[in-house]
Amino acid sequence: MTIMASYVVVAMLIWLLMLVLTITVLVLVIRALLRMSREPSLSMRAGAVGDNPPFSGDGPISVARHRALMALLAGAIVLIAGLVLNDALPQSMALIAALTPGLSASTVMAVIALPFPDSISRQESRGGVRVASLRSREPWTYARRYVLMQPLLAAGLLIAYLGFTIATASPDDFGLMRNVALTGPDGESQGSAGPYPGSYYAVPLIVVTCVLAALACLALWRIAHVPSSPDPQYGEEDKAWRVLLTRFTVFLSAGSMLTYAVGVLVVAGTATVRVGTNNGSLSPAYADDVYPTLGNAQIIMGGVVAVVACIYLIMACVAVVRLWTGTSREGRR
Image 1: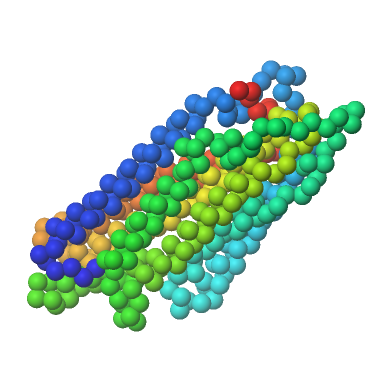
Image 2 (image 1 turned 120 degrees about the horizontal axis):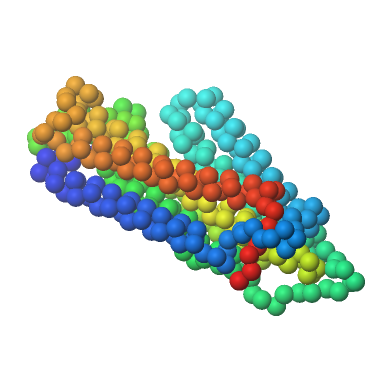
């Protein structure tokens, strides 16, 4: 970040605005989670024995299980391949490692978004009677809009912060925008530190974030528009797998983006502290510079976002596990 001393206050205000944006998004996300937990119409409630039998082994839930397994397997393959490739290409300066989690999550979304087999809609009902629902199905049929908007909120937060780090980055010894620098009033450099999420890291991360958000939306559309089974005995089961896969898609995509936000906050904060304290040669309480304070604020905020990201990823795991362990059918409206 090349900023003259006379613009230190402006820099601090911009940083504080970014932190306020982070806090605002976190508040919206947490409120959505709390509201969703109290939403009776989309809860998986246990009923009385005999009222809600376990999921069938040959109904539409089996197709959803197979799709979830294939998506997770594909994502794991991309994750492992990316980490191996990063070790084989150290000259990438950890760029491949930075992109790998987002590419892995994008692969999961892409597999879920693939067309489902016709077997779901070919389930014959008892007595040969075929029943088709005339009710319109959209993603918000299986999750409230305030739940579906969470990946977009997380993507907006991440892209906004990456835009800020792009604008405040400086070139390193190789000319790559991956450092943060402090310049004195006379224009002389007073030090630099890295790695910092400048354009070298931020531009590819923005592209991956946009791809992940788009694939998540496509996956949600696919889940909602898969033809349902004509057999009325699978009615509740059909709704249950759609709700669970919708939750898995929302929570995994939002959790992945928030995890990226954690990395950006912590890496940027650490570099900011280091440049403000001359790579540790000065006290962290160095009073002549605001950068240590701003850097530590980013690191602390990164820790808060990390907690929320973990909650999202845990909820994604719970949703996909319940495709196998759920013993009650979807609660009726």
